[in-house]
View (tube, one colour):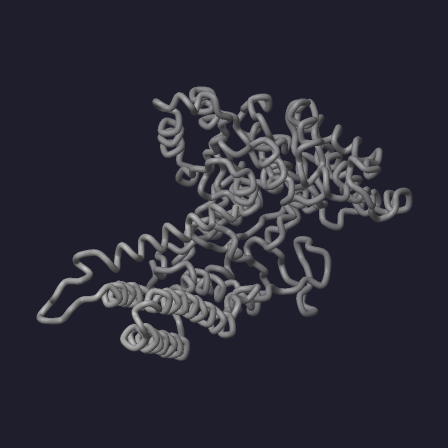
Length: 536
């Protein structure tokens, strides 16, 4: 190693000697003898100017402050003056024999000093750096607090001690507070206690869970089902369990946030088609598959809702199935707002569109709507269900659904099958409300006439989503304050990427009376006429 180092030093020394002895180093320019040391000094000055011209360290979005810039310029100027004094001055005073050594030391001094300046710049920036807040700055829109219910979320509820007609809860069959559900929950609490205290795979499976899964599978006509502890976690756990990086998902642009989250967690390639537009879906499927040999080897999915929460529209499942079979895709269908509602016996969109349930690959649903309980369910073939028991995060890592809520789901299905007139009453109420709102000023019904979500949107937008929402919020607040009718706007979180127009959502229940529906329609028409005069 020592011999190698000596060879390198000797080579450097020979190079410097060559520079000093070169013919051009002893040239005469305008009567001035250009010695070897002046040539090297000039070269070093060029290097210094180049270093000084380099931009100081700057963060991507935070420029240097005036204080930092001034300090850095002063330090660089000082280093330049010191070098000139040290190198040129010594080069003119000291004997030639020591010039080489002095110039080398001057150059090394300059480099070290320049590095020191860079560290000083970074230290100054670190002292002035202010981290971004953990949460975004609160806006007036974020400070909105919805009314607080003081009783059960039935067709009528209490807000600030006042009874109001409730159109803000998805209590489609009116089962909230039903006597049989309360009795089933009480018996389950006495037998099993409140919670399971463990995931399904770690001693959290109770016999009532297996009974509920079998009961739902029988009701929907599928081979098997799997329960989740939370309705939203059903969607953003089931989707990533099947859809992986590299897979292709074609989804409706109007899907709700839980599905959006599931699509993001899957890391699949996601493309969206226009809301409930089958021509757009066909074009997108054609674009994905045409001439793409690689797509034939990928898993491909179509993701839709039966009843869209963001618009109240019903998906044309029969057309979706035709496209699915033509382009060889799988279908994931969310029946959260259709199970217990659509179809002659409440079995959802498949019954409503007369499509065999076996043609749907994966069906998910939240049980917090028509069944008036909590949790979610995914149903399908035995292979689809077994795969989730090992690969679905919401099932594997979450404590299982409390037994009393599971008992409530079983009882709710029993009540539905024994009282199909609840579905007929719900359909009648939907028609009554839609007729009452058909000529409302400034608003229009955007939802399907069979949908339990009556969705009112502005006929003429204000030009911004925020402006539209403010107008609709004002209408909802006046209706509640003046007529004791509780309605909800489609306010979305900052995480929700849905681009559909906002609106007023009315969740119709079989428990609403005709007087409730008439009062809601008249109140909305009166307030809308005052608030939207001239908006048609």
